[in-house]
Amino acid sequence: MAFGFFKKSEKKEEAPVHSGPHYFDLKVKNIIQETKDAISIVFEQPEKKISYKAGQFLTLITTVGGKEVRRAYSLSSSPFTDADLTVTVKRVDKGLMSNWLPDNLKVGTTVKVMAPTGHFTTEYKKENKRHLIMFAGGSGITPMMSLIKSTLTQEPESICSLIYCNRDIDSIIFKDEFEKLQITHAGRLHVIHVLDNAPMNWQGYSGLLNHDMLVKLFERIPNWGIDNTTYLMCGPEGMMKNVEMLLDEQKIPKEKIFKESFVQGTINKEEKKEVATTAAEKKAREVTIRYDGQEYKFVVEPNRTILETALDKGIDLPYSCQSGLCTACRGKALSGQVKLDEEEGLSKSEREEGYVLTCVGHPMTDDVVIEIG
Image 1 (tube, helix red, strand yellow):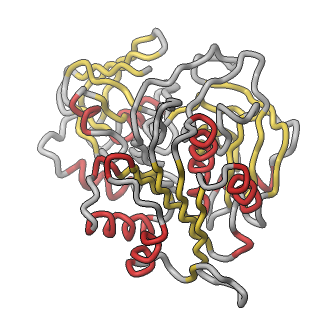
Image 2 (cartoon, rainbow, N blue to C red; image 1 turned 120 degrees about the horizontal axis):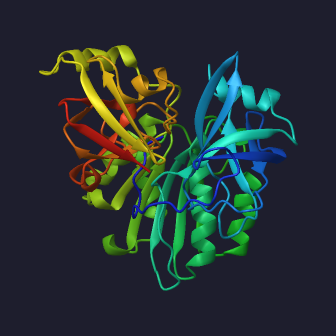
């Protein structure tokens, strides 16, 4: 997952129910079969409720094939409209946990999760009057659902336009719920479906979301002007690149465009290691990590990341995607220099303030001190 939405702010964490301040043991209250390939997992809120922001994600931690696996899933529930926490999971080809969960998870099971995090979120104000134009593909709808429900209930003057792409009509996640929301919030939510394979009687758009289709779609979307419009996207990289190209052609300022990228598995370590070994600095460096009231010192080899080294030494640092996108491993470098293989997960301002990602971070000096949490 890649993040960076309207406004970044520190998440508020409630007291834990799991050992350590960043973990929870959550009981599965319900499992909803959304489509043939997608389920929503409803978790009971613990006695001391977990606070979160619309658009954030949970990292689920479980054992698959004898090994601990962590995967991040966006919350499709809204903190304003839903009593429980819900993540929606879609099967993917060779997806280790995404296929394990629908096959094995049962109601009543307890799942270990990391505290909610992620910056694909916003602050809601009753007086706001804005237009959110959203582009989603497949399971990329999950954070959008959270944001849409929150916007419609918290900002009476704001509207949402959603362009949602799917393979076919049976693969549309939340299809019935969107129809109900459009009726309940008439005139404030406009959903346009685009199908790769449309049925014979389909009256909507079909085919891939290409440039020509995007131009036509924009003609149907209300124009509230640049100052009052924000563009959001979450889905396959190809789809998002097409959307970005069109927005660029229409001279939409980049600060008005935000995206969430879902990534499978972990970083391509061979590719990243090749980059690391070509760096001018090839020395092993000592790193100091401050986390959860403890201080850890260890040496990081040139071809290893800070997170990899810490985990090898049994230091339980927070992480999720291991690709430099989700920011679950984010920390602030109080001193020293850290080289990142991937910077997309951090905003320009965060990088300027010294924030780094340990999962793709390599120490370049001997005085690196990173504070996490």
